Length: 256
Image 1 (cartoon, rainbow, N blue to C red):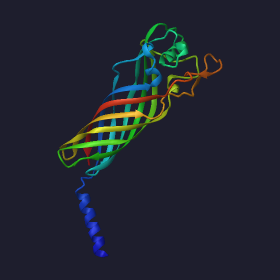
Image 2: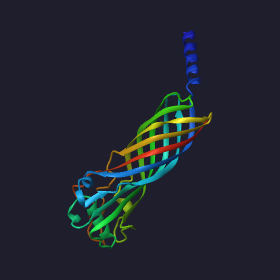
Image 3: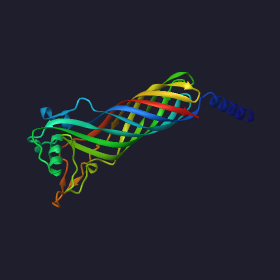
């Protein structure tokens, strides 16, 4: 029995000594393309179009504990996300797509917008991904890496813009942030690798994708204008809106 225990202990120590265990801390830079995906908006036809390109740069820091082939990682990222639109507001009040939301935004802001418009829905998140890390041999100069897991999105602020002007709602009981949920859940997948520059320093790069499982819009929100009875902000029948990003994440990590 003593020999068996000793053999297990020696095996454990040997395995750990060759596992390249390390705790790392680092910075994250994440240029990304973002979207708010909504089936109603996508099916609106000529009345509403998504902007072709809508990009931001998110940033933050992270920490990871890695053995040679498996580990766990947590990041804290500031991410500015959203969707740009072009459309036509005429007759939009009876529809469920974003053109009808622009019509209501403009009315609540004390403006009358007709005809063609450009609009922007911009959401600022603090994102906290909790990731399982799977790697090739991390003791090599270069290695491959996959990160996967859930992500918590904490909403920090919202800007809604029509024809280049931010819209707020001073004569109501709401502000733009109230139109979106304060906490949502995403899934994340990142594929890439790392380069060990020195024994305690590495550079990583990943193609990173995340997608929101839940509706980011707060469909229960009601608005009261000038003290009048409250009504639903979002039209009945509007489908769920899901945030999504595609990015190239670069990390600079110091390994203990």
